[in-house]
Image (cartoon, rainbow, N blue to C red; front, side, top):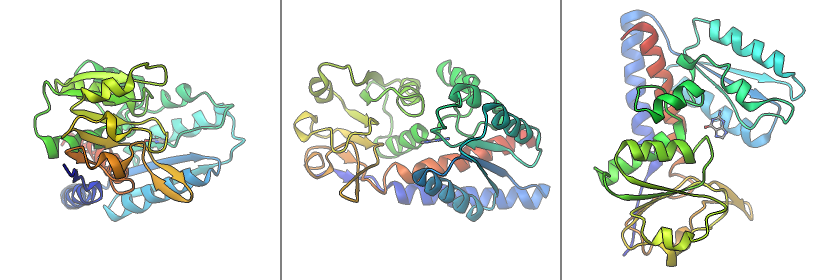
Length: 284
Ligand code: GUN
């Protein structure tokens, strides 16, 4: 079997095109423009690239984009004050604080300082609670992007065995919640899991988000399975995922490439979340 390659770059471009049309229509009707604020603390080179891409794509979709770059040494109290001013700013409808943060700042304090209505990352405890109890809220962008790709390619996933490898708050846990919401049978594996190859062998869907280059092997894969690779690893200056693409793509039914798979979906979903928050603020 040779897997169908899931073109996340193309799907993300379609979503951004739809968002652009919607933003234009709302602007014409109400005179209002959605605003996205991206807060970056420090000058981590990888984070700077992500933040630059978010700003570029937000502007292309017709959003007002505000990049707020703060020094590495900023205190937690000063950062919380900045977030509070963005919460109060009526021109800002969506906000994210790029992670990771410097060690002296408590991540949970920052995440929960963001107004849950503007929480375009879906990381605030209120949105986490809503996701886990089936209420409508803002959903983390990377898992949401994975779910869109899965549903577009597999259709109904109810009753399928889904294995999430990784238990982070950003990807693994919300991914599991989204799969459960679609009635998949969900297993979460992590660094202490003992029988990963066997768990993989029974999975119809594998979502890998562990940050270990080419970790998931072809021998572990059930023929025809759908493989969603969230990993972005640099090996010898080339990017690769957490799943060994060259070999697993000969066994799987569907696979996302790295780059060009899940990555572009994250920003498309960030814009989607900001548009959702903007609409809600206008009651439309
Ligand atoms: N760092 C890595 N992924 C993300 C993300 O989705 N949102 C934020 N805010 N920071 C990240």
